[in-house]
Image (cartoon, rainbow, N blue to C red; front, side, top):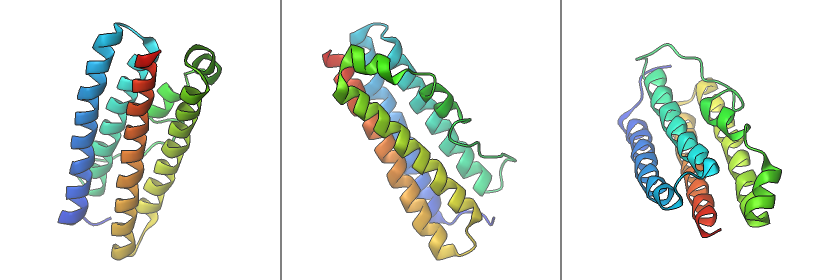
Amino acid sequence: MSSLDRDALYRLDILVRYCEDTLSKLNSIKEQLNSDSLLNKLVEGIRMHELYILNFKKFLNGEIDWIPPKYTQCNFGKIYYSIDKSYISKTYGEAAASMFERIGNIHMSFHETAEECLKCKNNQEFKMLIVELASKSSMLVDMALRLSATLSRN
């Protein structure tokens, strides 16, 4: 894979900044809730997603050797799949459980797009996949923020 062009680098940098901004918001909510373990896991998951993006960017740019993990094996996935959906449903309601499930679907789709980026040979298609990856990453982070807001109301 050749090094990334400026537009792709810029989009990945925006994703990292967006994760950082969201982490700041999540930490503010977390302080209000004291030590809600589910919220703590969400915050840690977003941190891990941010690290994945940084590693993905460095890998694509030839800065590191890295094998992008599958969606169940990345650190976000390990955190996500350690959470019991039925616990969320019982404790926070069906709306929260539905958001949680959507996070999982978006996360899986994010990894599918990341894999497509790695297989892509066409530069224009690669740029489109980076845009799609950015969109899915933003949706994932947004959904985690929405879920945390729901948790803070309960």
